[in-house]
Image (cartoon, rainbow, N blue to C red; front, side):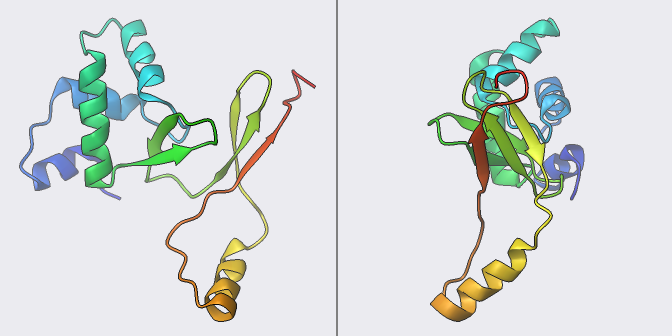
Length: 135
């Protein structure tokens, strides 16, 4: 995966301070635009919320970020250059923890192709419950 500077230059787009700060904050932890904006404010940056939304949209179009839906109607975003993973979501405190599923889901996807003639283009698997602090 290319870094954001290379992606922007390839598309002949400006490498701005706002884009660089957002790229630095965006991680494998799914964050909403409002959460990203809050982190930006804590860093005393002058980037406004509308700029966060515009740049996230750009990152999605460039393939630098992906949208994550965790069942609460809130869109979150994470970088695409991190290994595929899933999430543990606490229904009490709303904490989100990344987890790797050790069983081979690719075999199940292959079975869906053969058995149902269904081509899987992406999947989401999230686990809901109570974290160790809330249970």
